[in-house]
Amino acid sequence: MKDEKMKKKSKECKMKKASLVAVFGVAVSTVAFAGSGNMAKHNNMNNGTVTEVMTIEQVRGLSDNSPVIVRGYLLRQNGENSYVFQDNTGTINVEIDEMDWNGMNVAPSDYVEIWGEVDKNGASMIEIDVSAMKKL
Image (cartoon, rainbow, N blue to C red):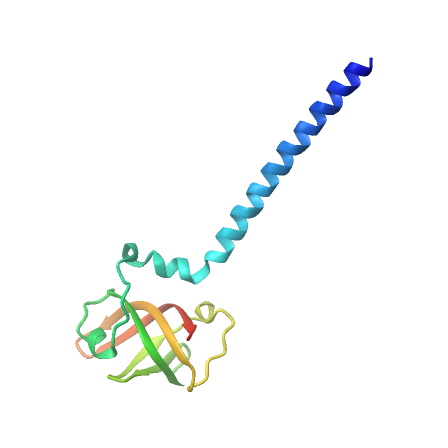
C-alpha cells in the first residue's frame, strides 16, 4: 500500500513538473513576442536589407516603397499625422501613425532615428511612411 502511494505521488509530481514547464514555455514565448514591437517590424522590412542610415538627400533619389533609416529632428506637425523632419541635408515630410509613437513624446530638440519607407505620390510629392522610431 505504501508503494502504491509513493508511485501515485511520484506520478503527480512528474505531471506537475510537466505542466510547469509547459506554462513557463508559453510565458517566455509570449514575452518574447510582445517585446518585439516596432523593432521587429523594422527588422523584417524588405527582408532586413536596410542597415545603413541615409540622408534626406539620398532618400529623395530612391524609388517608391524603398525601405529607409534616417536620423534628425521632427521640427513641427504639418497635419494630423504629418510632420516635417530635418537632417543636415534638408527636410522631408514624414507620416507617423499614432501607434508608431509607442508612447514617446518628442520635442524639436530631440535627435531621433526613423525607420520607414519612401512614399512617392507623383513626381514632386515624396514623404517617409514611418514604421518605427526611437530617440537617440
